[in-house]
Image (cartoon, rainbow, N blue to C red; front, side):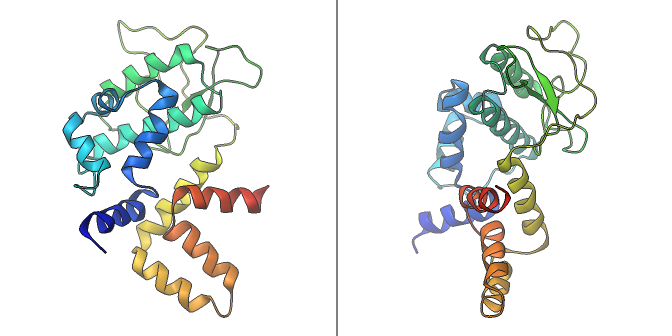
Length: 219
């Protein structure tokens, strides 16, 4: 395996997909160019390019990683038409201005109700950190998008399949390395192939494949 292929595999093990795939997935739904996305998350365009081409493996700044996760969740909502297009610029501004100092457990995300007009949002609990201002009172001097109210408590709206999968992946990767998970899957394969498949899907595989596994078994 050459160095680039090795680096790409490391990104998959860290993030569930390569960073190039992440950028190509999240930028178009939000109307962002590669350089504009870099500006939103707080990277230089050349640095983002190096990450996408796997010249560099990982994002070292936790605040940048948090902003990228917030952008990823925003893109998922835009793709699902659960966030009005008029709300996207404001949400991106809040991500751009954020410090990354927020937690998954206490934040909420702007989400449009089924049948609601563009620009009218409700809330749900997201799996990824979202910027201050999306989940609390808007900063002084800033206003909320049309139809959007400040949200301070989660509702019962379910998270997306990708959101749940990323939580499971993060849990697996917090307790064991990809190599350990693969060894466990190999050991379980003979006695329990379904368990082995579960370990590989969520512990070492791509996020897209894990989402497919999740949707297959959850309907």
